[in-house]
Image 1 (spheres, helix red, strand yellow):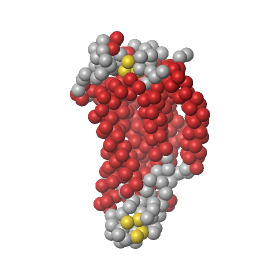
Image 2 (spheres, one colour):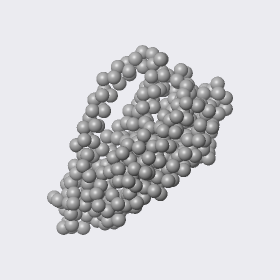
Image 3 (spheres, one colour):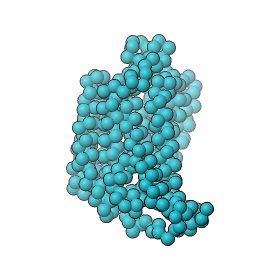
Image 4 (cartoon, helix red, strand yellow):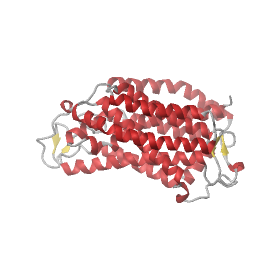
Length: 361
């Protein structure tokens, strides 16, 4: 196997990890107004991802960095052709991080409500746009002989790509609902389990249609196996959640996301960005790659650093493995209106709300 093939596989693994981990973050944010009828309930939901959401985003940074270093032509064509979509995703991720930090800085219902809206919108938008982007990557875009994108924004908003966006939004929302059922107690858990049939059913229908279209469009027969695994994972996640087997249900939805991502990357290879103008203009693992020396150095760095990152993230999830309920959220009353707080109760992204030691402006 060539180093270019190894790095294509590694990038696929990085994107898979990102979608599995950040997927439930997006789902929790999207479901915030549904599962959080009170401020305390919303704080419960946000605190389930408070200690891990920023670590989950590291997978995106590494995937982007690996693409830039291993396949610079791919990276350049993506960011020129998908510039507006990727910019919207970046803005949404920035707003989302700021919202986590700032929603608990003032004791004002209106202040927290506005940031909660920002969390919901900035979670749903990337969940939708990642599906649109990857559907276009797999299907192909108009690349000329110089590997430059010649389409417009409307070119990217084709029916297949829009279906991909709906599928990933539904899939991540389903994943987030199962995660909330796994990580919370009381009414938040009940509401999360209550929405599972609706969001899970949508994920099954939209995801199934998207995978079927992908198989028919690309004709890579072995990906039918990964697509079937994704379908089984979705159906199992639905059934297991309804039976109260939250841990196994979360495993099933994670397997479904893995199956979808494997299907997409498997349908793409050996291309990294097909051209719809002429197949000869397509970017492949061969003509988009860096030099062998660069790939060799990157491989050694990956061998050393990847186990460290995996061990750290596993430790983080183990430390914060317990369920969260209303009893774990300290009261936020007793503060002057718009009082500025010095810290958050979680010490992680300010997600738990106002601290107990305020200082007035």
